[in-house]
Image (cartoon, rainbow, N blue to C red; front, side, top):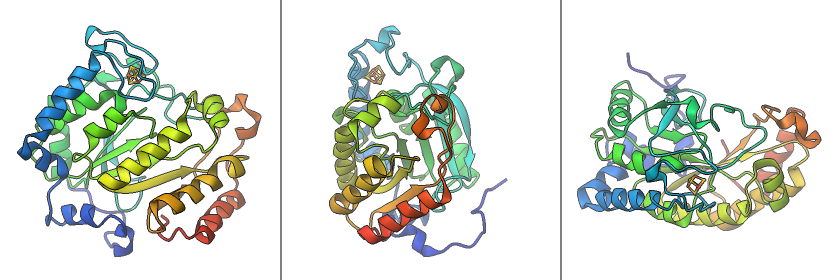
Length: 312
Ligand code: SF4
């Protein structure tokens, strides 16, 4: 069976800002991990990623635990990757579907409203997938017509060494989508350079207090800004802004303004309407309600008036 796009007919405008990604889909360019492998850089990245595991600082927590010995810390991920979901995803942005999406167990943040919890945060919930299995699956999904491989979680960051090892074994010309909460370290950002085709990054908070209270993520705004600037220089970018009730002034609007100011008006941006109070959100009165239609409309109008042109 081969998957296709939802309608079978596409509006080319959905690729604005993602021109290289489209050329890979059309077979006119090659996915960046293939180029990285041919140049020998991918092998060096795999070696460096394995080294970092011995004193882990893949995410901004920089715990320093020796994961090669099975030690764990906040994310719960030990010395092998676990996966709690793997399928062709039709719910992503239109230019991405069908997207071969791999959900890794374990996460570097603890968002009280997580829609994938508890599986996303419980490392033990997933089955072990070694790099060979991941690579085989990517090849099969490419054969079925998936347009990219989409590494998510939880968060993919703690699993980067095995993701790189898997890509070293993939021959399909399939773009890599790095689908992250944006809370990764500079070292991870360096490892991703030249490998990722599309950075699909959340920008959750502009306010530090909100980030700590709702996601246990100190320094999140500064870390996210740094990673957005780095990612935007390295490859194509698709930003997801999660609008939460009662967080328009402290988070959504300043995030929109920052994106316009620092990444440019053409940056492809998805103002998400999907917020609903999952998992432990009921313990927080400000976010214990779904996002209203009018709040979402307000955020979209604000983005348009701020000059963002390329909205999903
Ligand atoms: S990925 Fe982050 S949370 Fe997990 S062990 Fe490494 S530094 Fe700590």
